[in-house]
Length: 152
Image 1: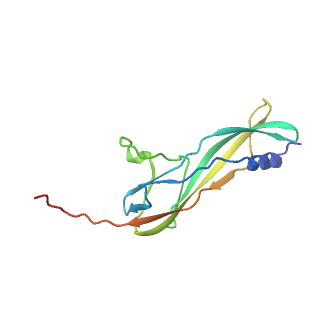
Image 2: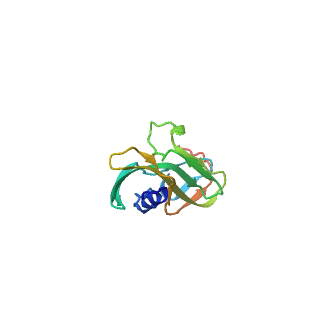
Image 3: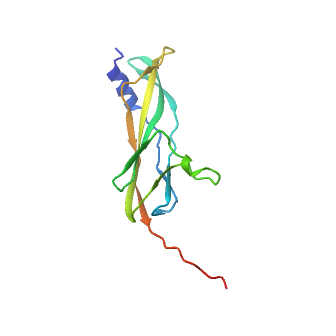
């Protein structure tokens, strides 16, 4: 019998695509009071499996992204973020401004939700989620001092 528990168990066995944490500026360094841009690649997809001799299709969606910022703060969004481009306004990014210098370790946890259907039947929500955590990224937050330079 297809119970909610068996459906959730089948959902949890589906291999999820990697959703790697990307950080800009690149190179493992950022500045205090500077927008550090965070983003990942996570797209909805469908997967069909056999469960108890029946064909079940899952419609799987990345629902939330929890950004662990390494300074005791976390931020949860429904937006996977995007890489920096010259003409994109600052408020369109998922970003964070560090207020203190020092090393931090960032991680991203993506929470996936799904709905399922038997054959071509109606879609039903899966009663539960699956989370996937990216590998940790070390980041050095530095301070900078402006310096006037003469070009005489």
